[in-house]
Amino acid sequence: MLRRFFASVLDVLEVAVVAVAAVFLIRNFLIQPFLVSGESMVPNFTDGDYLLIDEITYRFRSPERGEVAVFHYPNNESTYFIKRIIGLPGEKIGIKDGSVKITNQDNPEGFLLDEDYLPTNVKTAGDIQLTLAENQYFVLGDNRLYSFDSRSWGFLSSKEIVGLVRLRLWPITKVQAFTAPAY
Image (cartoon, rainbow, N blue to C red; front, side):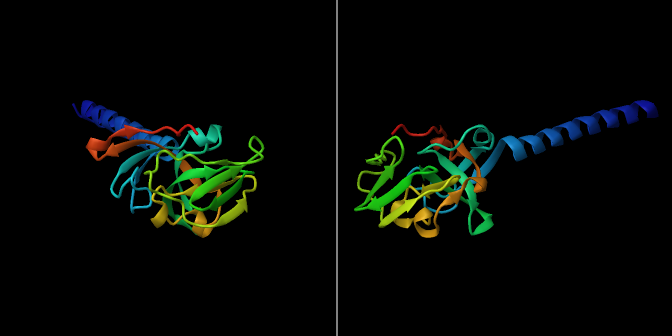
């Protein structure tokens, strides 16, 4: 009888260890929860939104323009930000008269970014001209007038990017999967 009791305890411990290991692996290497704090991504993401972040995709490919990423704030690694990727490595970024202009190898004359995910009356504040180096990104919040982003603190290094926003789980009325917009 005592032998059966210990066998049952060992079975329960085995299941618990496997469950904890699975949660640890998934949480640290595959998917991470993220709670939006602040208004820098309004109207697309609001304070209190609960998101799932894909930590795998950027291990196999580079971030793409328009994707929403979570990353370590470059000036304080313990703080996480959520912003939209606007400029890619090697591109020239220009902000003038409320518009964002991207110049790259495919578009040597540049093109104005058509950001249909923003409300029609939103303009991008600032007067910026910069060129991104290898492994540098330019990120902006969707709430352009009230976002603390690359216009304030400069480029984002690829090593600071945690992952790609894939899914909003909360609030339940706004559950949604996300993909990069087509430009």
